[in-house]
Image (tube, rainbow, N blue to C red):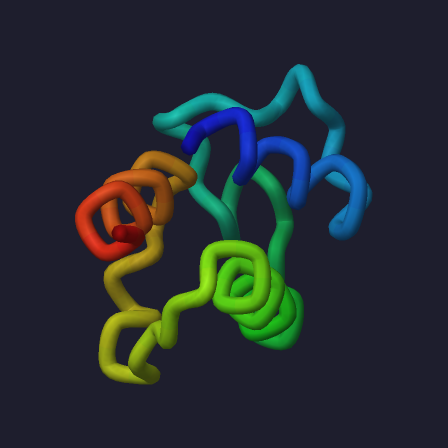
Length: 75
């Protein structure tokens, strides 16, 4: 799952691959703003065939948070 998220961040969000770790914070370390986060969520929903609730977005602080969420919710 980490590699899939990394691919989205690099290919779609133009994040430097070497900056992406499980501990990297989306906003502070990777400079992803709220609109970009919404775009990333849409890409994840399409790629993994799930719906991510708006209430869950504040839980996405680090790349690891996204990976954990998807690992638990993707069948």
